[in-house]
Image (cartoon, rainbow, N blue to C red; front, side, top):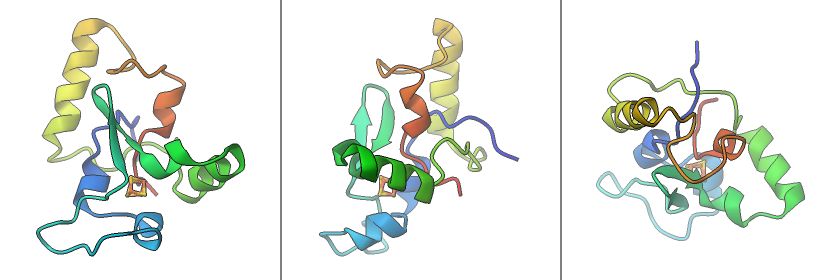
Length: 111
Ligand code: SF4
């Protein structure tokens, strides 16, 4: 079961997905494993590969990584809880200046 992604960046901080590895310009190690393409926009994280892609590639990336598929990493994710509390306080569906329709493209690897 998945719930909505809030763009905590948890997945991409844990390890790059296969596209992050495919286009890696650095060597990941056990101590340096956050995806180099993870990009903070306001309070949330988004996929830098997606942000820089043209429209055709955005569709491919989105489909390949199941953007919009929801979050399957809800446990032991304090940043996600912080963002949800912030949204709750503000009455917003989005914790950032990014429009709510864009948040479905937040960086996530919930395949
Ligand atoms: S979704 Fe984007 S930011 Fe996240 S690991 Fe994959 S390439 Fe990196």
